[in-house]
Length: 347
Ligand code: GTR
Figure (cartoon, rainbow, N blue to C red):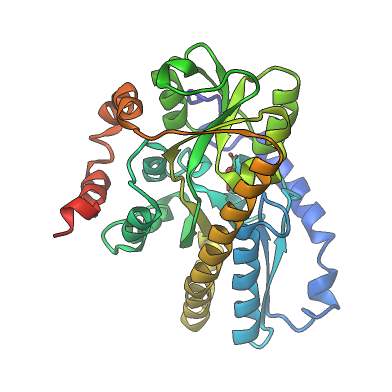
């Protein structure tokens, strides 16, 4: 049976065959472990990353890998495959689930199709700002508990990385109000909650992998897409869709995950080592993230992108309330936690 975005709900034969082929392709890269600096490694893990080498999440992955290598004296080697070299995110998640690829840094949006609790981050306008989001992500009864909810789907969640805030961009029409989205075709990440968000605004959601967005904007298949400044800039989408409207509708947490059996096969000391290295990579990634957002906003201004700041999100919240109504009960526990962590509820 296929779900509403057309992804198989169970693994198809095609997927397994493709995963096998991918495994063979990935094995071709093994010389690092076999005779290079990783020659003496007891464990060699691949970590798939969709972004380029110098992107803040990739830098976070690499910091994690470096800490693991140092602290294990080279016994555990993690090689980061950046730039989507191992495939698009939804496929990578399937392969990590199968254990063909051991690790990935991925967006929680496509993960929601595998572990529904992660759909929380696709709900619109739930965080006031980055600090509010981090209070939730760091909370034992919030984000940390949520990470554990991926285990039944076959994943061990190690940590979150900063995802920034996603905003709309369009090829022609400048969006200044929720009504402007009506009738436009927007690319979305491959998950139902975000499709509902675009539909609530009267737009037409088109789920597709990240790597296809540029050409789909170029060919006119799409009127726009949405993302944070570093993605909008690094994927060059601004060249074709030069109108950026900062409504900051979602903070779709980035997650670092490991195949669950790979994780469970590690001795407890190595699990602790990996867990601590992931935790220690987080502040580094956040710092890189914040610097990148500032630098990229400047580059976007320099490139002549029309940047529209949304001062008041009240009408946007109102226009998309149906999404919260639809999923509110399902995510009630976490939404309550998020509400309790708003600065206004802190005293
Ligand atoms: C980025 C995210 C990627 C990918 C991409 C997308 O912000 O970091 O992992 O999910 O968005 O829109 O597909």
